[in-house]
Length: 194
Length: 255
Image (cartoon, rainbow over all chains, first blue to last red; front, side, top):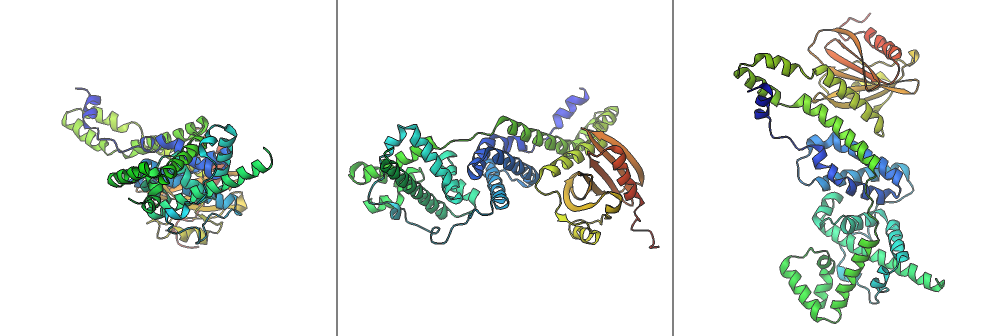
């Protein structure tokens, strides 16, 4: 038996590595950063800074949910970045927007334009994308995490650091805002004869 | 379930977050209700529209590679210097009577080479972060006490602005598996990190090394090992090191 075989026998089970825990979620991390910063260059910078932080914190990682862990760090790095680089942007919600809201309160009497029709036109997809990008950050991110990232309410609650109830009400509110914005834009479009 | 109940759980239904029993009830009601059926369908269509319209931005390949490289350097340095299996491996090899293998095995890779890689990785990382100091001050009476309470040793701190090496400040670093002090100097637009670790080793004159294009100098004095890293040229780094070595040590009586 040579030395290398002997060492092979005593090799311990490897501790989880950063590459295995976090790197698989790099796209999710970039996507969130890109939606929040609205620029490829800035998203790249933020992602790198976030990964540096994540590498530093990795020793304390206790292996629950790698995706939620990384997204939390990315999100915090984004907001720090926004504070430094876009001080005019107001991120926090005013009390009357936030807070527990019954789903029923968001059902309006008149239905918005038929969403199925939207799917048929690329122009509309671009518009919807734009409207989403223009939502206030806290509503924008909850839509990104739910619709584009498919996170569960529980995972969103972990990433945002807010209770489940807040996730639900914020999501309902975000969808309402998007529909309202769509309705306004579409109506204007018709009036302009587009 | 009634209409107002369904409206209350509409988003949860559409997001698949209802427990199975409630979900069946809601779906059954929607199937039979002329108001709720279209309501649920509309909500589902909105979600579809958002998912299709919303761009999913994947991480660009250059960014991905840079991050992978960052992680690789960090992992490699930590794994090799911290793997507890070294001792187990060594004792097993002794038991198997392969003592000569131990010498070869434990000796490679050398601990100096490992530390070199760690200090370079730390230096590079510090340049990429948005702040290179935790305490930003050229005043030694601000920086030195800042470490008190964070470390169990007191690194010597002095500003050399007059000699062309202004002190920018200090920060906590994590090297060789412990929290240690880093001092940051500047020389002609180039940052210089000086990592200071507690040490049991005897005093040792400065040695110069080069790693990945960075100049490094290492010395031990007064129970501490210093690692200075920078992309300034070797002669300039040597000047800073000379200044730091001339510092009065804590143990010398004040003149």
